[in-house]
Image 1 (tube, rainbow, N blue to C red):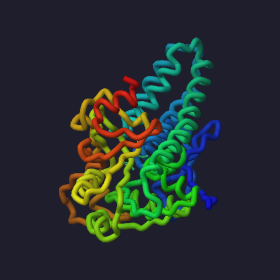
Image 2 (spheres, protein in one colour):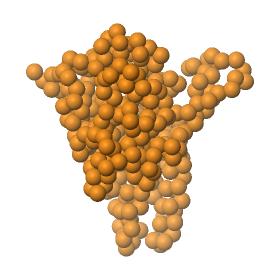
Image 3 (cartoon, protein in one colour):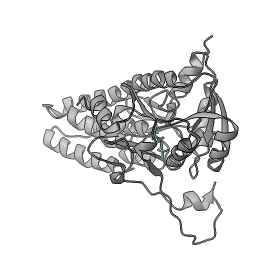
Length: 350
Ligand code: MRU
């Protein structure tokens, strides 16, 4: 039996703006925001109105293409200079997800040989749309590969939101659940709430409920107990950057789950598109880890929960060493150890 499901999406291109689903307001308010100025694009990324590695990349690409479309000059050199300046600005918005730089570099490459400002403007818009539409196809492929690894009716745990609203559609870690729901499969997803920003409780629960997936929320500190008591059979997460040896940066708390999987002898899968691989970095120790504002920890919904002046350490991501990863699910197939060799051949064709 197959189900008719509603998989939410968060990005809609509207000619002179990008309409985004404001993820800050979910799940209690469905607010669509129109982004048209460079500052609006930058702010939306920094303040997590749009978030998730692929969605950040696509948004930044639209940001450049849409805003530069209004830049008044006939001089191609001047246009390229402005392109580079704005590109650097958007690039500085968040440091960990490599998809941001990847998308912006894809635009730069696309206009390498253009002959006029008009041609550059059209090419930028065309490339941004292409990145957006290709991502949906890629995520669906990730979902198909992931589905082959997960047993119907099993309990699976995830963290953060690596879902349809973090990509064009379907997501990465959540893609098998959306596709499974379409195909009449019944997974039971345990969603870690994902402190401090609560992508799990605010976004993953909402997104999976929209598409009819059975989802149960737990606090991050309940992961070990839940794996044991609820017979969780696998953990699947997204990724923000995967280095040449398979080390993977993802939302803070991910490496803790990978360590638990090793203890409980269950598989730990990472799901990510090729654009999340950064083969210029040999290992995870070189990945820049974003540190965010202390208020994310000292306040809850604007209410102070820690004494005034409390010292805070708030890294947004951690790195899971490749030895703890059972397999990396990509659009090209599943990559297994030895990662260094297999990533090189699957991702860069070497
Ligand atoms: O800080 P966020 O919410 O942007 O972090 C997102 C994650 O860590 C996701 O797991 C990752 O970007 C993959 S999204 C398909």
